[in-house]
Image (cartoon, rainbow, N blue to C red; front, side, top):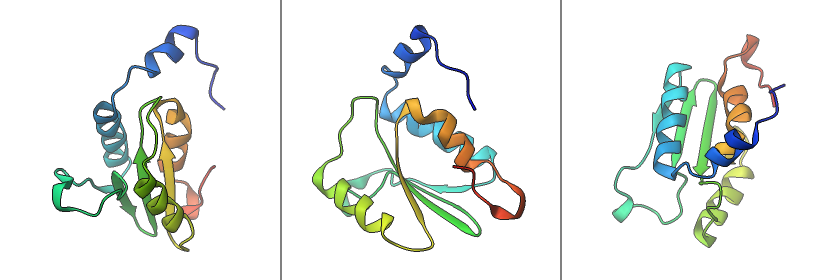
Length: 116
């Protein structure tokens, strides 16, 4: 269990941009052995597709990353809902204040079990 954040720490999380948050999550995932994919230029991609795909067999994670105050668009909501309903993959909406939970999800555990 993580320690409670101080007011200063909590306030600093509200100023993290989605781009910075994406870099933080990608760096952590790569360090923890995940292969990551992010569509750099989404101009010709499916609208609303999640920001990040991570693979570390036998697991696949789709993550939509939002700033502290960011909101899902209807196409993002549709993608997340459909992926959430698929067996064999995990789909999350992550914000900077979810950092401890994100790390817990990404950390390898014995026999591939997941700590949630």
